Length: 162
Image (tube, rainbow, N blue to C red; front, side, top):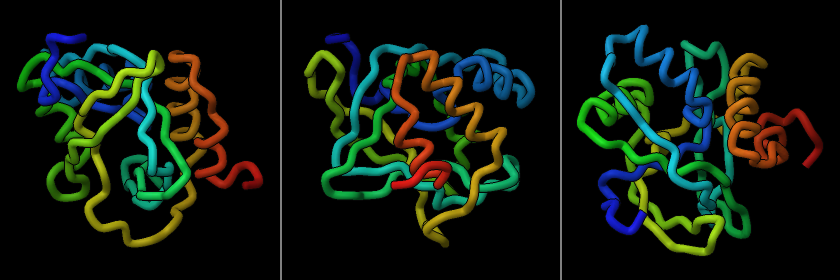
């Protein structure tokens, strides 16, 4: 991982944790050579998961990360080896209209610090849009693949008590 530059790294915290779903989306939308490869589980401190974006495609709330002292978001750092990978991510995330990319500091499970690009909603219009159960399931499947706790996801979805 030492030879990777921050420009090559992307932090996924939502539906893109589900790699088969991302690949299927790419195929359906003409990004036939778009690849992202999982590198390491990492934590974004000082942020919380939030369903503060409405997605017509998802028929409900979609995940965002919002500044929140004493909170954190777990996710996966992916290597994005080429421009088509970034083009696919940008299209799927609605960059630059709906989401912007921010270079944020993360800490890996093995304690290393690194920078990666994180998609953040530009202008959340609401604190909470209820997510569709299918979307929550897609993210849960991704969490399970990488052996990540789903508690913060369910809390953000307001499916458990805080």
